[in-house]
Amino acid sequence: MHGQARELRQDRKVATVTTFSQCRGVPGHFFCPGLGCAGAPRTTDRDAERAQPVDFPFALRGFRFGLAKVSSTYQVIARKWRPQTFDDVVGQDHVVRTLRNAIGRNRIAHAYLFVGPRGTGKTSTARIFAKALNCTGGPRADFDANDPACLAIAEGSHLDVIEIDGASNNGVDQVRELRETVRYAPAQGKFKVYIIDEVHMLSPAAFNALLKTLEEPPAHVKFVFATTDPQKVLPTIVSRCQRFDLKPIPPELIVERLKRIAADEKIRVSDTALASIARLADGGMRDAQSILDQMISFCGSEITEPDVLDVYGLVAAGKVEELGAALSAGDHRKIVAVVDECDSSGRDLVRLLADVQALVRTVLLDAIAQGGRSSRLGGVSMTTEQLTRLLDGLREGETSVKLGLAEKINFEVTLLKAVEASRARAIDSLIKELAALAEDAPSGGAGDEKKKT
Ligand SMILES: Nc1ncnc2c1ncn2[C@@H]1O[C@H](COP(=O)(O)OP(=O)(O)OP(=O)(O)O)[C@@H](O)[C@H]1O
Ligand SMILES: [Mg+2]
Image 1 (cartoon, rainbow, N blue to C red):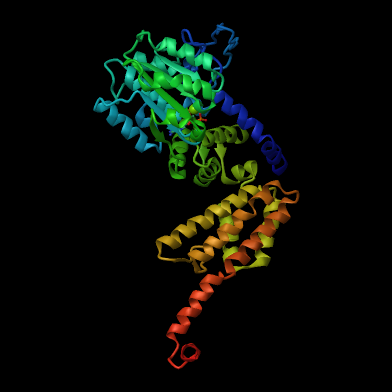
Image 2 (cartoon, rainbow, N blue to C red):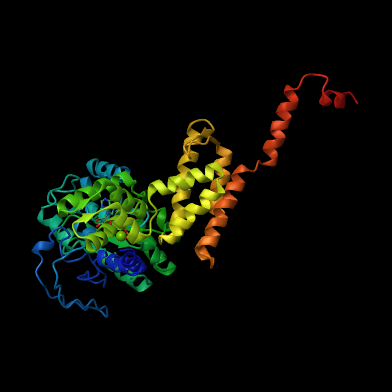
């Protein structure tokens, strides 16, 4: 089991990448008139079963998206469960609420920028927004997902919702073509919605060519940009958009959604296994769903926590707490023993370091909330200062653990150094304590004598 799990883990990066590229729906992209841009996947996300093998002969204007046959009706979980309405979106209430209100009050801006980590709902929200704008009788936030216009948008066949992959259409010429096409009235719906994904990949010249159109587009045009890297988007572009920051999705919401998916797929998954998947996903719903997909392939219809831990080299939450307790107690022997155990059972030490950091951070936040102390790390009462130094020590060793030759040794050294750092007392705090002692000392002490002389 261990050998097999390790092997699978070795392949994880490759496997995950494959899954992600499937999620992006490259097969079946089409071209919008006059632009040579990629649209949404042709297969409806939720209607995999309906999909029949279809020919996609599109190869226009020098761009070739050759998909000979969609031979399988299987869709990865991440695509099958793409949110179709505002209510389906998990953990982005601030964005959903603002968009709903904007639509309800008829205060729809002409350009939006969705920013956030990967797999948190940018593209999905952009498509849902496009549905709300172009649904029958719209704009309406509570549109019917089965409305023909909405189905067409989900399928990527709506003529007025044009999805452009910013990474491959990033030149000034493509933006010039876009400027030409925006002038034409919508063919099917009320608005022409241009969704530009990975907008940070546009070249500076392309950004500049877009400025004028973005400032004052025709009334029937709406732009929705999505990016994981807002720093790379020109400030002049950002300032012409309403910016929405999508947040990493809290683990409990990820677990909730995965439970629903597992029930639907008739898979039994333990709560601890789901919690481990959510921990691995780091706030990304797509990552969580891809991991669940992979675990189903590995385990079949029943997934337990040890399976997830084995495949991904994760350390059980209880073991992370045990290590945290050893750190707070300054128990060097225990620290070395836990590291040895984790390493010999094939656990990922880089991941373990991140988990320990996350644990110490949680305790630090608790200490701040409690007024300066917390004993949540192994029952030892620690001050915010000690916890900060411990966390700083763990952070300092990060590069050597990740990039150094001897991962295990570097990890041990990092932990031991962090313990020492947390126990050392800063000189300025010592001076403060001495000063306080001197003030409390009875008069006639050394301090007074000094004053007299
Ligand atoms: N907030 C969310 N609620 C529900 N499902 C989500 C959410 N975010 C992501 N997902 C799931 O992840 C998949 C990918 O989401 P989406 O394409 O919207 O992410 P993204 O933010 O655009 O990611 P990227 O930055 O990689 O392009 C969806 O099909 C859906 O299954
Ligand atoms: Mg996206």
